[in-house]
Amino acid sequence: MSVLITGGVSKISVKLAEELLKNGRNVVLLHNNSSESIPDALLSNSSFSLVNLSSVNEDGVKEVIETKNIQTVFDGSLTTSDVSLEPIQGAKKLILGITSVLDAIRKSKSPPSLVLISGEEVYGSSVNRVETQPLEPITFVGSAQMSVEAMVHSYAVSYRIPIVVGRLPRVIVSSKNELESELKNLKDLEYVNILETSDAVRGLLSIEKLAQSQKPAEVFNIANSQEFRVSNFSESRNSTLSISKILSETAWKPSDLSTLPSKSQENSKEIKPVFLLFGGDSELKTQFFELGKLEGFVVKESSITNFQEASDKSVIEEINTVKPSHLVYFGNETESFEGDCFTLRTNMATNLYFPWLLASLSEKNSLHFTHFGNTAISQETSSLSVKGYTGKMLEYFENTLRLGTKIDKNTLGLIKGRKTGGLLNNNI
Image (tube, rainbow, N blue to C red; front, side):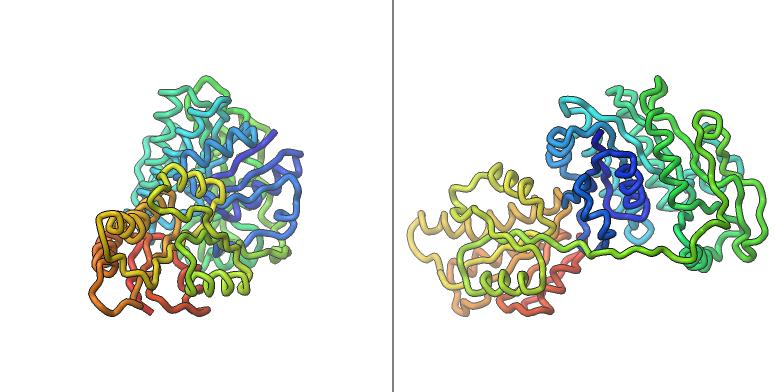
């Protein structure tokens, strides 16, 4: 059986992948954040595939489901999102992501089941936190969890997609060192439910087969039976997060936290960004390509060279084939594009439409886009005039970075470390 994990790289998704592999299953893990790291042992496993693809790319997700013969999708987007830091953008991305995953599932030839990984923040400050309790979130994180759950439930009802939801505690740890670090950040709480990462994963696997039940998007709390006082970990009480349902319907039980190891022992490797370069041959593009290779990044040149003849479909197909994390466009540094109407058409396609197309596709698919402008032409030209309008258009894309005509290691670091969201106009 093959399993797809969407939502990005997190300690939950990594541990889930490891456990699934131990059970003899093939695993595909989607990610689109090149700054994350992943264990070497996982990357070297022949039954594991790491794919640079955002959950918002519906066509890409559907292709993975069909080509990899996926039977179950685990969505962990709620475990990786920083909604509390960027509430509006984070919530928007979560809803778009889960909707794309759900549409990819229902449109697939053999729709897989879905396990949604949610959290206890949906209950808010309620002290009676059972699965049938009306949700009363009081934070952005809880509201995002509730919204995603609502979307999932609506698809389960409308399209009969087999779905199950697992709600995990706020604190998930793998070692005692991690536990100590987490407790330092919980001064706003008196008691907290703490679950070991391996227990959380075992719980998710135990409810996976229950997705086939007749109840749409059945919900299960997966938590510790005890809550611990934040100021004094030795003090505990019965958990307000009820786990009676999962205990009665599965063989899962939480383990004793006293068995936590002192620290996690595993070697990991940083996920390298994948750059897809567009634009004609130029010295700047050559410099970028060589410097990227020198830094150990994956740099690929687009096969599309005629921007007038290239269709939107051909660009989309290339992006879905290469699965880049970053798109980079290099404008022509020398041509002024003076002449007749045919020259104007070339100018508009090269300097305006194609950069706009890449920016819009990047925003739609949650990619990073960098546009290298043309500051080499000092005089007023048709080329410079069109690029001026292009610059104004690209300001409306929050995931677009505009740079000039110089490049060095600092430039690469700026592009590589860039998150989607925000605009930087920097003619370096």
